[in-house]
Image (tube, rainbow over all chains, first blue to last red; front, side):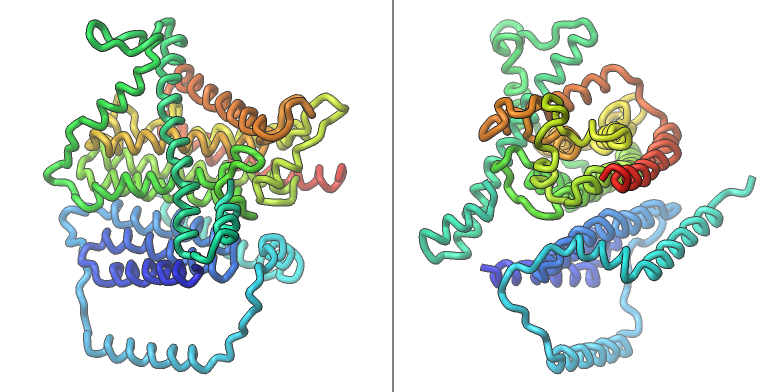
Length: 162
Length: 358
């Protein structure tokens, strides 16, 4: 059962990721990314990462994807711009992809994967909260400070001078 | 009736896991769709009547000679549904055909999967899982993608403006809504909707319900911020600038007709049900009786839950016929400069309250 759904999820993720790369229309690529993100959510569910799965939807679908689509739509004179992407440097690209694939394949087959017992693990939300607020409080705060800085910076840069 | 229960039940009968999964999902999905359709039909009728009474009219009563819409116009929505189904399905010549046809599906999926986590009663919930609140907030953003898709694919200025406004509005109001729903989560210490409702059982001084909204001043405020943001998230008046009739014809829905448009309508009313359901589960005791201990079990849960949801939906309709539409800048002002600071103070306040009063 789980295997059956797993392969469906993998199919959705990889199929739409392929669409993202291959589609000639930039907007189609952005929308194909939606299905890829949702597929990745499914993969998180298979890893019993309930909280991360929902965060994936909130951050990637609700935030990043909307921003990408906004970026495409708000581009000035969108009708005069050719909304497509073309392939350049095919030879070098193929080499890079093959090299990366070999490296990743080598890693996948040589990593001693930890296999967990087939039981339902505990909920992760409370544990994540506890870790963030106790053990990793400093990195957490530094990250939020960085985001705040980025936010203020973006507002300052995009503001019209009065 | 959760999917897990059905799966266990099928597993007891025999060993057919794939079929059992498909059956369990279908069996729990069909009533959910019926809830969605029925909710829209009832809500459309009520909205017609409520708007009529607010304007001192009588609303739909009959359809004239030949076609009568039943007593008090009760068959009005049935007639509307039939009209929408047989209407010509137009696709604009210059539209992006694929995206134009896909958008209703995306919007419908966004509403439908959100409905799956709504706790209609103690047992009547399709999936009961530990990140329920967060899940409902999260899948709300899938609908936005559908709206932007519809607006873009229509290849029409009004549609595109409507879609951009809608996306900006929903994304903005998700923040105060999310920050406010954190208040009940902090108090109950769980994101599971059923546990959240169980936290609100019992009573204060024997008579008053132990609902989170009445627990402390911060949660009282949080409820109103959540509810108003929720109305904004469903694109309803006074926050309906995405489809403002007077300026954008019908906003992002302008080019849609027939059944595709009906799907948008269905999803809008389902979204009203979802956000009201979340408000009820988070602040108003869920399926708990308003009088502690009175009819507080079994099927009565469904009655109380739907009763509370219906009251909230009625308030949304009341708003619609009371307040004028906000301007875009007013809308953003209310969200970013009023609601978000108050919502953040609420979180801070509830933390302190919990620290002092336990």
